[in-house]
Amino acid sequence: MKYKKLWTDMHSNIHHEQMEGLDMWYEQIKKTMDFWPIAYYPFYMRPTEFGIKVEDRYDDETIAKDWAQVRELAERAEKEGFPMFMGYEWQGSGLDGDHNVFFLKNDGDQCHPMRYQELVKAYQGQDVIGIPHHLAYQPGSRGKNWDTHDEKFSPFAEIYSSHGCSENDDGPLGMNRHVHMGPRTGETTYERGLEEGWHVGVMAAGDNHSVPGVFEHGSMCVLAEDATKEAIWDAFINRRTYGVSQSRIEVDYAIGDTVMGGILETDGEEELTFHVKGTGAVDRIEIVKDNVLEEMVIHSGTWERERPEGVIRFKFRLELGWGPDTRVYKDQWLKEWTGRLETEGTLLSVEKCWNNFGQEIVKQDDKSCDFHVTTYQSTATGKWMGPSNVTTEGFIFEIEADADSVVHLWIDGKEYPMKVRDMLYTSKVYALWDEVKELTKKTWGDLEHYRDDPWWHNAYKIRVNKAYPESSYDIAYQKKMKFEKDCNIRLRVWQKNGDAAWTSPIFVKVKR
Image 1 (spheres, one colour):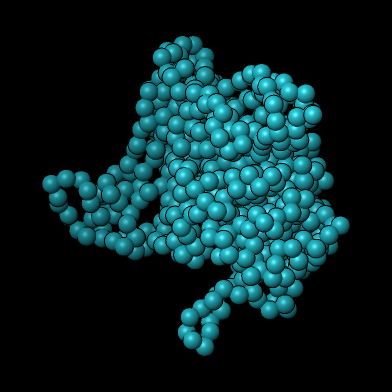
Image 2 (cartoon, rainbow, N blue to C red; image 1 turned 90 degrees about the horizontal axis):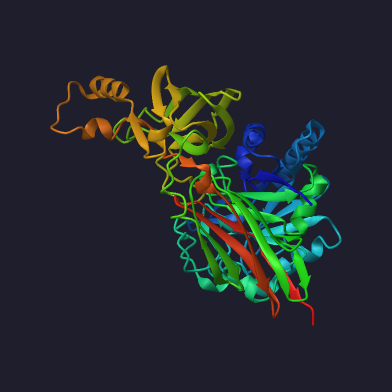
């Protein structure tokens, strides 16, 4: 069966004090995602008589009022044809790990028992799931407890988020952002769950507490028959899910006729196939069997010596942002950009790499894209619920055009023409020199220095990342595999720019 790929942020936590912005969150997620499982956050930092604050749950009356508001929005979204699932975060005593609880229908109520087994029992027989997140923290201190896991209630787990990667304890994407919850340990990772025999899939999601659908914090894709809530829910409970760390790497993966998340019964020999369409050059695809690298399909080195000629397809990422140090220029905390990209060929697709509110595609057709972008400076420390230092917004464009044609970019009325062949060779950064020089003179006078640090370090910048031809990001693969015993097999995809994707495993059962 051919499934649709539908994208979402399944971990956007809205707090009680943010409920007045619920409609704004809803409008933002509709711009960036295909559906929305919201995760209401019923906790706050409660002052104690000792002076220290501790995280605790709001009173039942406050939660009930907020929950009614979430329900009202979910019902409105359903009438508008946008799939939305009510959800909330459950933490309990911290002994079993944090989980987000989601409902198929809009009539569910929150439960907050101390233990995970009690949570599962409370929703027995109902269309409810509880998805564990930031797995790899300390056991007993909000890390995942695989000993109490229920694979029917929790069919997949969050392998990556703003916290970092919980796949294992020696991978390259650490868990260093939330320093108060770390460091990462191997005792609670996703791989431990597979080793204990659980059928558990994967996804990635932001753990966003300020803006839903933050590009830089990860997102998930579900393989669903259509975009109805029922079809998406079917994908949930059958683990047809995968996650990406940033950009929307497209992955199709199957063994025989069984797709990711499925259970395959075999006599011992099947064909493994995958098709990966990256957002930039793919470095390698790792086939992982029972948490051990089975085979590495290396793509780097297979395409770089080609000289593109004639009409080609290519992708590149445009980033806008950076700008003045807010410690020096205290009022320079945002900038609005007006832009237009135009090709002499055909604009095939536009991916939104958005991290905050204030972004808009004004107009898009097969030749051009007009946009309005707002970038923000951040001085957040990364402590409790703080955002990371996000400063850029942008897009990934896919274009079909002659290798010797020109892509025209206008930012705030100024043109930046770019030859496609040059884009395929290197990235390019443009600084808004006129703006920063005017700002510096206005703030500090006729400053002089023997190098350009005072201006370069505080300039807003445009980065046109290196463009990559289709041969670098579109990979199809197949091979015969023999199975002598039960196992699970999944894919890990790495791009040259560090973006990653993780698929849910296929669980192979060999007939005896």
